[in-house]
Image (cartoon, rainbow, N blue to C red; front, side, top):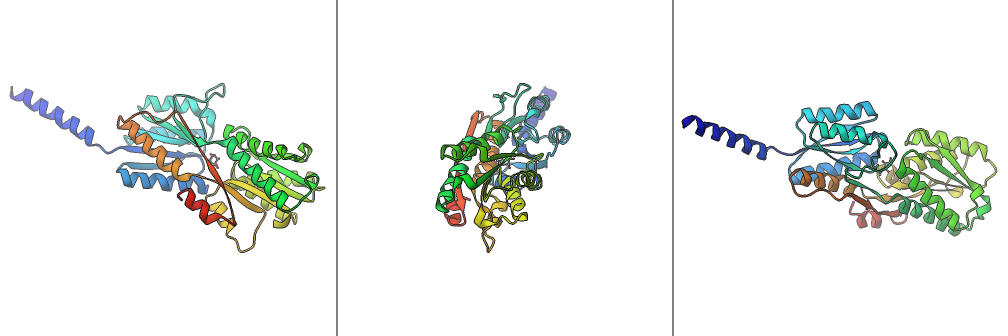
Length: 323
Ligand code: FCA
């Protein structure tokens, strides 16, 4: 009798301890050096403090580090993770590793795909509405071309391209479609494929495009993020093409764009479509924690919006985006 009671008490204590165990989640990002991801982490920390869960931030620059990070989270008794993977084709491997370790997984920014390139529907996702935001880039450039009264025949457009990432392709396709819809000559559009989505690789890609097309008087540049467009702007500057002859509009609006738009003298970086690091960092974490706590599976796919931010309207845009 006594033994049964003791055993029951022990069981109860174990159950209680389990229920009281604080939730721990990982937030895994592909490029820790990029301000956008630092912002996502910052907002995830805000959520952790507010809701009382533990956040483990891990950089995952490649597939090997990604798999190690997932095992590491399991060893730390985390219950799930948010991920922006270094390669979306790791999707199935990530899903398997999560299942094996009994971890819930949601993706952010870059949607994970299976072997045939199809999005993995069972992994809830929050990303940006890439094509739409790309169109805002193109429309912003067209408005500025018109304001400057440039003749489109004399303008070259650099598309800094990273087409192996679906959201990257969607974004730059949206931008180019908007240029074409406004009558921009298709022959003046030059693809500049970058090897990695950072400023250095965009710089190298844009440099080649500029060298091969010296005939244009003016230039515009689009890319999947601020770093891509900054690379093109720096490459143009290296050839004497400055603010008066260049219109680059990025995507992101985090520190990189902010410091560029606040330089005393304008540069060719005309603006950025600001997107919501807050929603991507804060809300994905909370959705995951709620899921862990049995409060419902996160929405299958949420696509967030952006706003054009320039030197002229920075304060209003930040306020409107709640950042
Ligand atoms: C992708 C890009 C990042 C950022 C994010 C929202 O992951 O590589 O720069 O734009 O989407």
